[in-house]
Image 1 (cartoon, rainbow, N blue to C red):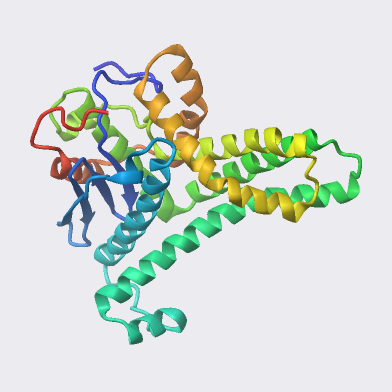
Image 2 (image 1 turned 180 degrees about the vertical axis):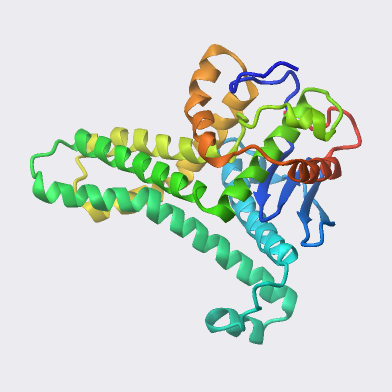
Length: 323
């Protein structure tokens, strides 16, 4: 098979998607979610669970994105913690629980305690992302405004946007240079390649998967990049006409607009990920380029993990996972 363009969209588009973990991959299909982790002895640890069908508000456009995002954070954090535990080769001694973790473990049953800890970890992860990529640029721009007192509001919004992109890019670049994270990003590449192989109608073998592109138009990296882009656009449209200058008020409004941003971004990604015209390719190009920092070429053992994870979640009825 000839090397495909990074913007290539296969004829069949699946709703199956995944997340790279520590020495593993989580895949989710229409009815099942599977976590496959490579243990220290080389064997695969596999866990599966049923995915509840969406009902009510979770199916409505511009609202369903909030449910998808929240669920992804919780299930992703749960899978990440599981992969860290399973892949541990015993070289790092188990630390005694302290602080809040110990209090939760002492006051709740093990299963309930783990659920609470995972939820808190997801909330902290969201708070960190919002603080770093949304609130920090606004605060820094406010400091610039103390020096440049005549800065026009539209310029302030543009400066905020530039800072958001710079901070996000720097964060991804530094993460990609960390040995442990770089390996996770290799599993990320294996996840994309495996899905591409399936969408191209090829047998899921290591050889076929290896030949696929590692950039995928429906990647979470693209989602995060579009979140930042949409927040920049809304800042210019909302803050400039209302003449909002107070830094703390701008930060509060950014938080209030976040559900709108997530809802709009989800629908945007669904559209551009499911179409292959010139406009869609242009719209998804920045997110595809960002994957140069979050996906790397996997080795065969990583591809095997991706294949096993995807096979576990494919629907019995052919085409039931159509995008």
